[in-house]
Every structure is written in C-alpha cells, then in structure tokens.
Length: 182
Image (cartoon, rainbow, N blue to C red; front, side, top):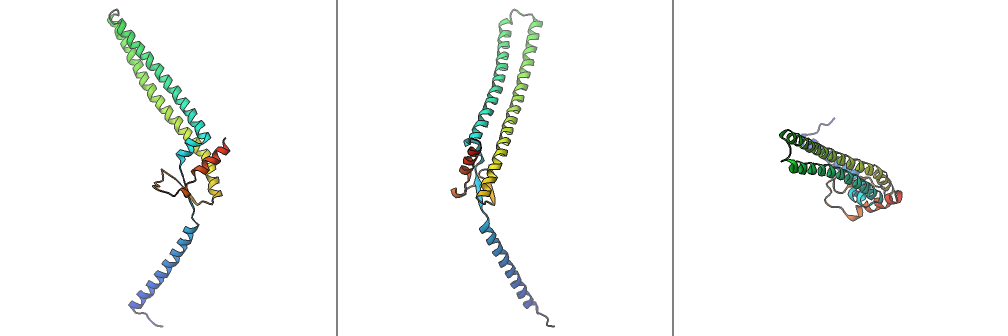
C-alpha cells in the first residue's frame, strides 16, 4: 500500500473539490434554464378588473355612509354649541353647566364615533382586499400552470426594482379575471 505525501493529498483533494463544484454548477445551470418567473402587479389587478372595480365601489359606498353618520353627529354637536351660545345669557348657572356637560359628553361620543368608524373602514378595506386576493389566487394559479411558471413575484411588494415586460403577467391575469367575473 502506497502512502501519499502531503502535497499529493492536497492536489487530489483540490481535484475532487473542483469536480464536485463543476457538477453542482452544471446542475444549477440546468435548473435555472427550467425556472420560469412571472411578475404581477396586484394593485393593477384590483383597480382595473371588473370585480375589483365593483368591490372598490361597494367599499366606497360603505365609507361614504360612515362619513355621513359622522357628519350628522358633528352637525348635532355644532347645533348644540350654537344653542348654548344663544341661550347663555338667559340660562341659570345650573342650566349652563348642564348644557356644557351635555356638550362635553357629545364631543366625547363624537370622538369615539370617529375612532369606531375609522376601525370599521379599515376592517372593511382589509376584508375587501382579502376577498379580492382569494378570488385572484385561483386566476393567478391558472395562469401560472398555463404558462408553466415556477415562481410569480408581486411587482411592488417583493422588492422587484425592474423586470422585463415579457415577465409581466398582469394583463393576462386581469383579462382572465374579467372573463371569470364579467
């Protein structure tokens, strides 16, 4: 049995490492050839699709109704303040104090209403977005399968700074979504 010297062992180890690296690189290059990527602008899908427009219009109506409730409560508060100012000379001290307490209570209620309405609007917006994304997911998966895509990135939230228009599947997703939900 022949023993290798230190230099021979290092050379043999180097050859083995280079050979292994070559095979790993070759495998990765073949895998990269098979990897197909698509890029999608979800915001455009929501804002330009028929269903997205319907959902956004419905959401807008909800928010306008909430704004109307707030405006009415605010107007009542303004009217109470004007009443207090008009009657201030005619009211007794106890009556003024009572009216001021009522005004302060309504002001607090208005602030609570504003907070509640903001939370309701945020929740309605979040629910609408979730509903849209669930419906879009089916379409996106179909496009991915049809185009044999391995990966789809969201254009703005994934950190994509640039992509070729050839990778952008947004128009196709919108078109298929409109066909599915005319």
